[in-house]
Amino acid sequence: MQQYYELMRKCFQLARLGEGKTSPNPLVGCVVLNIQGEIISTGFHAKYGENHAERDALLKIPKDAAKDGTLIVNLEPCSHYGKTPPCADLIIEYGIKKVVIAMRDVNPIVAGNGVQKLKNAGIEVVENVLENEARMLNEVFITNMLEKRVFVALKTATTLDGKVATKTGSSKWITSEKARAEVRNIRAKYDAILTSSSTVVADNPTMEHNVKIILDRNLKTDFDSSNIYKDGRVFVFYNENLPNNIEKENIQFIKCPVIENKLDISFVLKTLFELGIRSVLVESGGVLNGSFIDYVDKIYHFIAPKVIGDNSAKSAFDGKNILEISESKVFKFEDMKSFEPDILLTYTVK
Ligand code: AOF
Ligand code: ZN
Image (cartoon, rainbow, N blue to C red):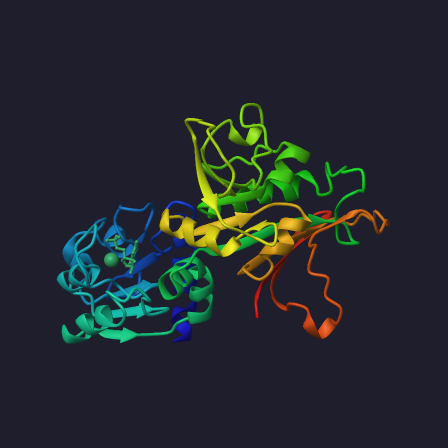
């Protein structure tokens, strides 16, 4: 098993080359060894609708080159006719002797059928190599498949005292250019970004992304001049009881129920899933962040070594008003990275 760790890590690296481009499909990378155990090809799933990783790797080499060789891939090879014929069939055709995978596919059409197909053809299948890492890599795909819902990530950037702005609203910039460049990388991994009308009004951000979601209960943002509406496809959720005859080419207005003066977040997420959006990055102020706290799967928390020192300055999360620590929502530490002088902590749901 251990002899495959390094090769499986290579599959993860290859898979990540498709980040942001494969949705709703998973991130998959593949390495092919010949009978002598030398790497003769690599491949990855580059974009939705294009070849799967295994097909990408195999089609680069002649059929006999991989005979009696080994194929390493981070996801069980598929057994179904989708956009392309089954990868399992191609692996059999190439005469591969051993297939090493990190995890079984959670897609019910495949789930175990790929492994069975390979075994029926006399191929040895080694399973669960670096399975936890593989599950983390495809956390969005797994959530979508098993729970039939959007994966929700949230990014915030605070001072040492957990503030996102001073009480006058000054927030530019808490974190360094290096950290903000990383925010752009993070955005690119998700199908859409989501923010509130308050953030649009207060900061007039651009938030470069092809798909943007704005929660604007009272339709109070300026649809003509706000930067956020200047490009991309935008979905604006607003109070279903409000009359609305605004028309903008790139904006789709969606009526949303209101609960206790707030747009119903579960309705928003359900609607996004129906629209084909599989993951979203929430980037907003404390109030919307607070409303999302019960829905998030992952938090990206940048911390700058600065102090505001004012209890009326705005915090990263608001509105929960927990009185007992034992009642607070608990997250699980995942990772820490340095973007000097700032750090990025990543948390997932416990
Ligand atoms: C991928 N890339 O490298 C592998 C996948 O939409 P289709 O027809 O391309 O099929 C997508 C399904 O194929 C996907 O949900 C997953 O179950 C399986 N494996 N998919 O996009 C790949 N190996
Ligand atoms: Zn496939």
